[in-house]
Length: 193
Image (cartoon, rainbow, N blue to C red; front, side, top):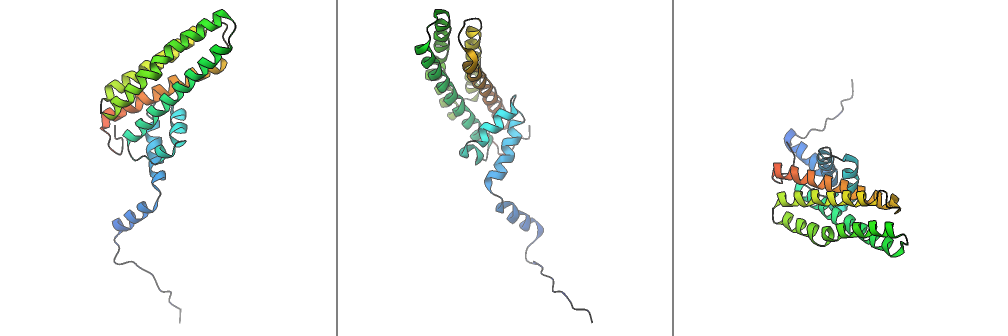
């Protein structure tokens, strides 16, 4: 006689309930990682977007587009502030008058962005004025580009500053794109746009 193997069944658990239990077992970061990927694919700089949002624990745990937009907007302000500090440090060291003038022009472009435009954009974001936020991010990208234009042919060592300008400009593009998505989806969990 063949031995019988007892079968374990869960008659009290239906498939949808079992599926919900399995989904609940996955960490929120995995599910939000999917949202990060989904959102970043809709931005002009996917790699920068994904790297930026995955590097921040609050973004990685974000469950909606609004949280991701908030994170990127904060990253833009942080990077623009760091770039302004870098410009000011370079200005103190620069001896060439032509290069010094280019750096001073860059500082003049970044100061209002860091002190007024981006803080106002963040405040507007939290008040729900996404159009203004998107506009301010786009303007900040233009100012980073204008700084780059001032550097060309000035004799200033544009290597590191050029890279910083590019990051600020590209992050602004990512932020503006995510805020644009937020305007379309109204802050819902998924995109479906």
